[in-house]
Length: 398
Image (cartoon, rainbow, N blue to C red; front, side, top):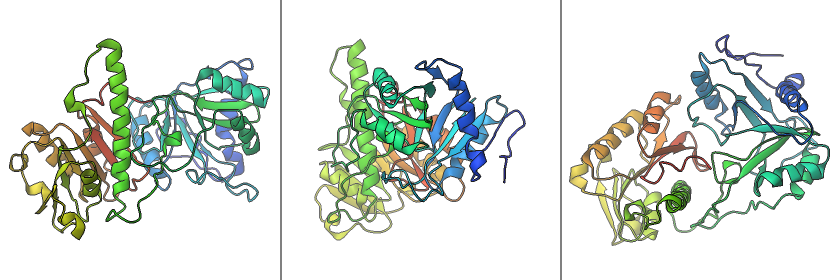
């Protein structure tokens, strides 16, 4: 049964749901666009495409609908043909069922996504070898996102440089190279984007977990956040050296030995454990104590308190303020604004936890803070992560 998303009439929305006929709406439109060009001729699309976060697809829909109101763009949704086909199983654990949303007229950054295809294009090709050659001519690294023609896509992927899906050991240094994404719409049509919102293949990174030492799995979020920040730092350094050959400012550095860090909402100590392993001096704040072994660490000062009732002045100058506190987003924002106004810290890593429906207004206010970036980490669930450091400006997306 065909359904249409309730959006303004100016916002054309042939939405794709479970029906097989509906699944071809996006494919037919984009394939026609590609077919209007000669084989091998790249046709840039007017909009962007997003892979939604699994389990939170409706958040992406709502976010796009808010931005699309009053626009003249178009929106298509595609659900993988693998759904309902028992003869095909995805071997990639990062993709359970392939879904993609393409939308035009979206000007501001979208946050509830696994990956944004920043500059999507379609191109027709005659053979498997030609498809691979078209991609290699643009750049080296491409991650495949399965949408259609899975066996044919596998053969194309075999002719591209190998992208490892192995778990990474922390700390992990992300290569300073572009990571594109591609799919097949039909046997002779590629949908791809050389520029994406993440340096990770399909926006996903998996770490080799430590099942012995950390007191909670929250450490995975900080590992991923620090890996991203290290990537942004090196991108900014590379860009700076192109224009002004000089030493990178010390204040740009990531948490390290002798850095002074606040960890709000620290219990049982997942983030504190990470910062302690980096050699930082940590003030861990929570109503409940940390794991016993962390309470004995000499570089950790524990304060049994509600972090949000402590003033920045009472805690003093800090290199980093980190928060994984469970709270309503406006309360976190108010606390962060006090820190920014105090001038006692300029670098932050905070989890914006949703209490029910996403608070799009507060998320946008976080995003408007200078030097900021909001991401949905692989380890995030019903939450986003706000990163704020001086070196984020100018880096942009990969």
